[in-house]
Image (cartoon, rainbow, N blue to C red):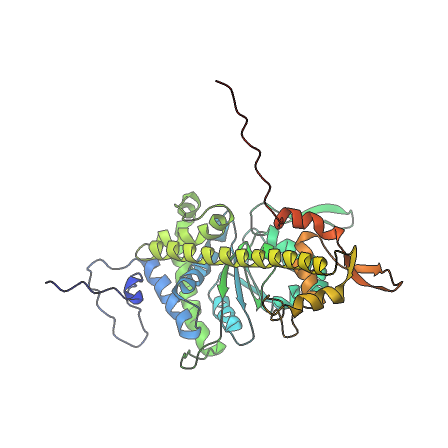
Length: 405
């Protein structure tokens, strides 16, 4: 009996990357007489630099970051300017380190921690810079801060698509001026960024390194020359391909906004050839599927909250009004629900407000039957959301009318 063929390992399933040229070491001969193209090789060399300094969550993320950086050098060829959202659950997940390496290899980096929207859109030209925002959670982390920076969020959302200028009155004659907003942008921060930004982003979900996962220290003076050399190689390779890139309409493995966001990365991969087209589409499929599942999980959690609030009202005898504190205590008392573990203190008033925001439901000062005033909700606030998202019983279909012979 013949021996069964060995099952390929995950490493075997990865695209066959060309050998990386390491300075100071002899070049490795190619087993195939056909040498890799300059595009294929420069992307592989850039990929190796990211792997050297940062532990990314998986090979798909490494592919995506590499292609996103390359795509910044053809910004004027794209219809959409994908964002790179570098997020993590806590400090020391490598977000800022990744942004350091990205900064030294993208087209015309414009990095900021805290800038006004006016300063940003006045920095965007017809040949836009690449916007880089570290500590983006400080811009959008709380409702008060997010409201203050709503103009910045609007700018980042508008700049995802070409021909979405912002209008301002300027000059002594108070004339209306158009300022372009179109520019690729990378944002790094703790936790989730606003949904409208995440929806326009290639999302890299960083995590802390395990013991034994080692990376090289990044030193600006010592290490940026090699990254700048790669940046110059990207420019030399891509600049002559600008018209070609504009005309390409690559087959995409996803649709709608995900396709708009990933198309520049797929085009760069197709221009490079070799293993890149296959690797780019595999990364696109896997990463967009993961984000769709994240959205589904969040949606399911919100719907679970609506159903549990209905349960609390029923347990209280369906009063017309309920105190916020009483509602939260009742939700946190259910050990089998997700609410006791929602945060260190369980579900808080702030957390409840954020989860209900999408349904247009919020607490307010109410007068209760005992004459006291306190924050609370009315039952009437929830009836529409209950009917739409978690009806107690599905409506019975009307029977088909019978017709005579």
